[in-house]
Amino acid sequence: MSVAPPVDVRFDRYYDHDELTERLHALEAAHPELATLRSLGKSFGDRDVWLMEITNRATGPGEHKPGYYLDAQIHAEEHATSAVALYAIHHLLTGYGHDETVTRLVDEQVFYVVPRINPDGAEASLKPPYYLWCGNGRFAPGQDRLGGLKTEDVDGDGYIVSMRVSDPLGEWKKSALDERIMVQREPGEYGGDYYRLYPEGFIEDYDGAHVRIDKPFDGNLNRNFPANWDADEYGAGEAPLSEPEAAAIARFILDHPNIAGMNAYHTHGGIILRPSMTLPDSAMSAKDLGLYTALGSVGTALTGYPTISIYEEFTPDKSKPRRGGLMDWTYEKMGIPSFATEVWDVETEAGVEKTAFYNLHPRTEEAQLKVFEWVQEHLGEHGVRPWKAFDHPQLGPVEVGGMVYIWTYRNPPPALLEKICHANVLFNLEHAAAAPRVRVERVETEALGGALHRVRATVANHGYLPSNLTDVAIGRGVAKTVRVTLDAGDAELVMNPREVDVGHLAGRNERPFPWSPWGPTWTPTTKVVEWLVRAPEGANLRVRVVSERAGRHEREIEVTS
Ligand SMILES: [Zn+2]
Image (cartoon, rainbow, N blue to C red; front, side, top):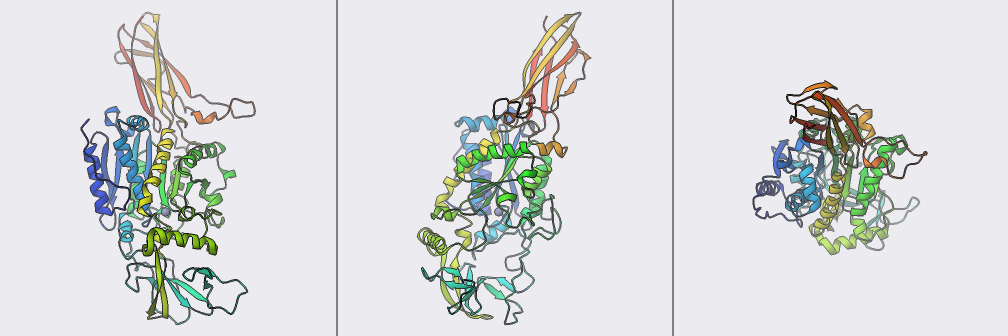
C-alpha cells in the first residue's frame, strides 16, 4: 500500500463542479489500489458525470464482486446529496485498513458512487441568483417556459424568492404572529388585507388580469427512466433516457449486472423511500416487502429517518403514481433492492412535529414561525429575505422576499452536513453488506478405484439476501442462476457436465423466525455438486462458483487416494 497523502475534503461546505472534480482526482490518486474514477458521459454543458469505483483490485476485479450503487444530485438543487456521496467515497477510501467493516466490504465487494448526476443543473443552482433549479443543462434558468411568468431575480439581490402583491382577491394574508410570514385566508373570510404570492419574476404577454405560470420544462431527470415512463409527467423529457445524464447512468447500471443494492440520494424530508412507486404494498411480493421492511428498519435505526413506501405514503394523488423514476426502473425492471433517501428536514430540526411525509399544503402558523425563527437564527438573510418594496413593471408595487428554499428546506446549513453524511453512509454500508455472496465451502475427493474419483463440492450463500436478490428479479427473468464449474485440467469428466446450474441460493433473510408449519418453506442456502472424474494421483482440480449478483469464488484440490 502506498502512503496516502491526506486529501483536502471537507463536509462543512458545498463544492462546485471544478472543486468536486479536483477532489475526486485527488482521492483516486491517493488510493490507486482501491479507487478508479471514470466519466460516464458529458452533460449538455460538457461537464463530466463522474463515477468512482471502489474495491480492492488485489482481491479481484469489481465486476466479479457484488456491487453497491449509490448516486446523488439527479435534481440540480439537492447539493447536500452530493456531499453524502463524496462522504461515502472518502469514508471507504480512508477507512480501508482501519475500519473492519469498510475493509471487509472493499475487499469482498465493489462500490459504484456517482456523486453528481446532474453537474450543469448543480452548477446553475449553486451560484447566485439562488433558485430552486431542478433540471439539467438543456435549458438555462429563465428559459424554461414558453411565456407567462418567467422566474428571474427582479431586484438583483442574488436570490429568486417570492413576490407578494396586495390583491383583494388574494388567498394569503400576513400572519398576526409575524408580518413576515404569510398564512392562508379562511374560506369564509372577508374584510382584511389580502395578497397573492408568485415566484419572483417578470411576466411576458401579461393581460393585466391573470398571472399565468407554466410548469417549467427544465426537466426532472428522475422521470426520464424506462419504467412506466409517461410523456405527461412533469419533467419526463422527450423520450425515455433522452437526457444525457440519465442515459449515462442507465448505461452504467445495465453494464453492471453485479449491482446488488442501490441508494439514490435526494433532499428533503428526512425519510427513506422504498418501492413501490406505482403499486400498493398488497400488490408487492411479500418476500420483497419483507426485505424492504427489514433493511429499512436498519436505515431508520441509523439515520432516524422513517422508511416509507413511495406509493403508499409519498404519493398525494394515488390515481397519479410517479412514472419513469430511476428506482422504479432498478427495482421493478431489474429486481435490485433500491432505496431513495430524502436527507435533511428543516422542520424536524426546528422542532416541528412530523404530521405528513408529502405535503404541499401550507404549514400551520405556529409551525411556520418555528421554522422561520430557526432559519433566521442559523442562516440570517441567506435563509430568509426581508420583504422589500419593488416597483414591478407588470404588477406595479410589490414586495420581494420570503424563504430561500434552496438553502433552508432543500439543503442544510453546511455546518450540519457531516452528521447527516455519516449516518446515511453507515446505512449504505449495512445495505451493501446484505448482498448475497457465494463461496465454495469445501471440495472433497473420494477414490473409487481405477483412477476414478468422486468430486464433491459444497457451495453456499453467505449473504443476507438470496442470489436472485428479489422475487421481482425472478418474475422479470433477470436473475441469473448460480453456476458451479469444475476445472479438471487433464482429468477426464465421466459424470456431470463441467458447468452445473444449481439454481438460486437463499439468503438468511428467508428465515426471520424459527421454522413453523405456518411459515414459508425454507429453500437451501447451501447446495452440493458432484462429478465423477478419471484423474491421476496428484492432479489439480479447481471448483468455481459464479453468480452474477453474488460474486464468485474458487477452491483448488489435489486428487489423492
Ligand atoms: Zn430529488
